[in-house]
Image (tube, rainbow, N blue to C red; front, side, top):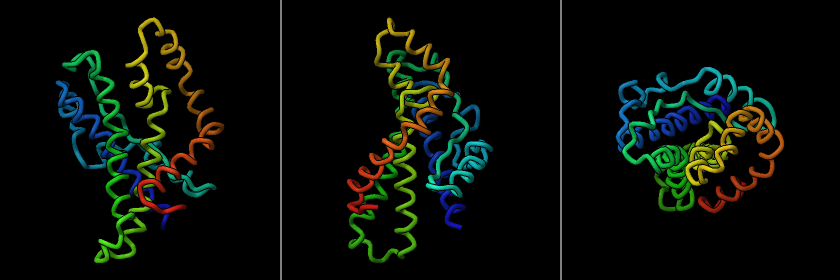
Length: 204
């Protein structure tokens, strides 16, 4: 039941993540996401069967029970963006920023729980899972490997003469993500826990 509930929280979080990409793009002049009907809180419009259901379920039932996944990317046409220099960077950053915002809001409720004594204990259990999931999404999506948001942010800052790096990362993205998940993530996971403690004041 806990795993199932965590998957529900994950779906909610990735939906918010994708919607924020769409709203950021629209604010910068690209209405593609709205025309595609993707500026909606209806999870059915965003669920990716593999990334939103199958992968999270498998990860939830095997150690270390890390719930993670993704939704269908919101369509963005970068040529519509009014700011051609930084538009894609801002749109990409909106997703992780939304997850970090959710983590901070619910994390501060946990930190100042004495001021929220009217809330049931079950709420703080939900808030704990929500903070962890959103920190995980924020940190993972900032990794500069395509198609993660971090790659668009990274590419926005490097000079064009380094386009070869971009092309290499894009052509080897799947392999790089596998290497990161299975060999590098173990060194990143403590960062998520430190951020959790920093925001909530609670150690896990």
